[in-house]
Amino acid sequence: MRKAFFKDRLIYFIAVIITMAAGLASRHFGELLPDFVREHFGDALWAAMIYFGVRMVWMNRSKELALFVSLLFSWAVECSQMIQIAWLNEVRSTMLGALILGRGFLVMDLLRYAVGILCVYGIDRYFLSNKKA
Image (cartoon, rainbow, N blue to C red; front, side, top):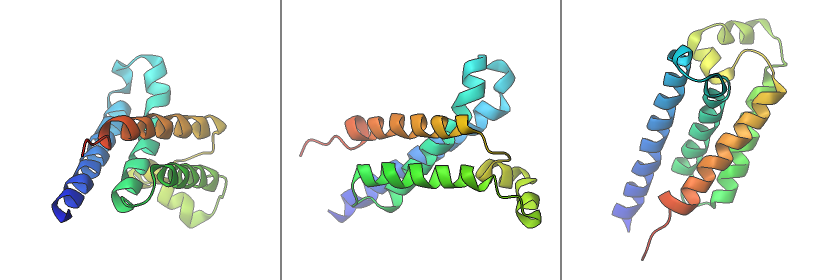
């Protein structure tokens, strides 16, 4: 049982790393990608990474709770971009700060996050966690 627990956690950790790499690649190689992919996939992948991270930490909780927490967290981060405090803007001006906290509030990002989370929730529900006992 303990071995299976660590194996499952490792699967989610690898999913976080792969999703993070795909998101960074979508930003770095954006000029090579179709416009639709360049505009939308980075944010969707960021939110997908959050979902996988939540699942990795709270594996014994429901997938639906992970979906809700991930959505709430990503939307809270987006809404926090409306807060303009000097020290927070300085954090956002760094590359890492911008990747984590974003730079400016966009309603479209809320939709991108929801789509990204729903997509990986579906992957999780039907592929990653579909075990035959």
